[in-house]
Structures are given as C-alpha cells and as structure tokens.
Length: 296
Image (tube, rainbow, N blue to C red; front, top):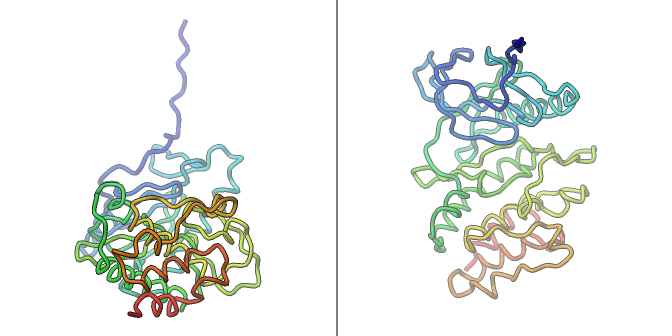
C-alpha cells in the first residue's frame, strides 16, 4: 500500500518566473543574485520602460511559495528575516535621498509577495569584479584616474548626505557601456555620525576596513580604505587579504615598491596611504584623497 505524500507548499531558492506581474511591473530575466536579494530586468507597463527590480530574498531563511510569495523558513529564522527586511528598506530610503550620476537611483520601493522590492533604472555594463576575473586588462593610469574620480565623486555625495557606504568593492561598482561608473548596493549604509554603536552586518574580506571587523568607531576613511583596496585589486588583478589577516601579518607590499614605473607617484601614494590599517594614517575625506591622487 502506497501513501501519497502532500506536495510541498514552498519551493527553495527559486526566483520569480518570467512574465510574473509584481504591481505594474512584468518580470523578465534574472540579472543578479546575492545572499539577500535577486535582481531582475522588468518592464514598467505604465511607462513601457525597462527597469531593474531588486527583490529582498534571504535564501538562507526564506522559501518561495507556489503563488510567488516568500515566507520565512524555518520559523526559527524569523529574526533574521526582520533584520534583513529592515536593512533592505533602509537601503531604499537611503537611495531615494541621493540623486547623483554615479549612484544607483531608486525610483520606487514597495511591499508585495510578503517581501519588498526596489525599482531602479536599468543599466547596461559589467561590474569591476567581472573585469578583474575575466580579462587580462591591466588598467592604465588614465583609466584608474577617470573611473575612480567619478566613483569618489559619488562617494562624496553619500558622505554629504551623512551616510557611510561600508560595502565598496569591485562587484558594487558597475562600469556602464559609456565608461561611466555607478556605485551599487547601499544595503550596508550607516547614518553618520551616530550616537549608536554600529553593529556590522556586512563584511567583505579584503575590502572592509579593520574597524568594521573590530566593531570600533567608524569614520569617512573607513570607506576610503575600501576604495583603496578596490583600486589595488583592479591594478594587481588579485583580491587583497582581509584586514584581520593583515593585522596579524601584513603581506601587502606598498604599490610604490611594485608599480611605481606604471603610475604617477601621487596616485600610488593616495592608494598606499588609504590602505593603512591605522585610521589616523589615511586621508580623512574624499577631498583629501582626491587632492593627493591628482597632484602632479
């Protein structure tokens, strides 16, 4: 005698199907997946414009139901869901306050399917991680100065709005087809200054500053450490070691010792200084970093 088992009501780790309607957006293909989100191309049926939609989907504690909605699984992970959802909405709120050509722009964010969505302009391009992993191109001085001057201009706008980004890394910098970079993902953004002790939820080994790992006081130069590590990764085609490993035994050689023949002295100096484990030795603002970098 066979016993028919009931069909499961949820499906693990599946994105929305193409042509699914969410509000007035028709979902297209998946264009990015992270630990806490899925990004789709979509059609805005009101304007007929192609947009990008980011869905909050913490794959380690959520499952997709057959109707497309998301639910916490297992139930013991409810607290992770609420923390993640709050961060997701904070990202939408942060981005809605910033209007800059080098910062991803959110045009709408809303609740649906028991989760949340951010709607952004659809951009063609590849992130810097793709270039590092999939090409042998070693960027020349002109490329580094051009791209990172614009990245720093975007970061300055983030700081001007009293936020720290706290997750600058190659995969969060999109290089558009025009060559103009775009800073992505402000999910880790932190209101600064704040009377509250920062509780770090996002750490990217190799790019997060030591004070993020140590949960000590953060500052504007915490983002500049990440910028320097990102520039270093582009130049060397290698992921830098984590700040924790560097604190125990620093194996990073200053670029002035390894790349001084290929880049101007002050560009190298800006990167090396911002790479310091000691906050007091780094440039203390975007303007100071840029001034060092561009001085001949």
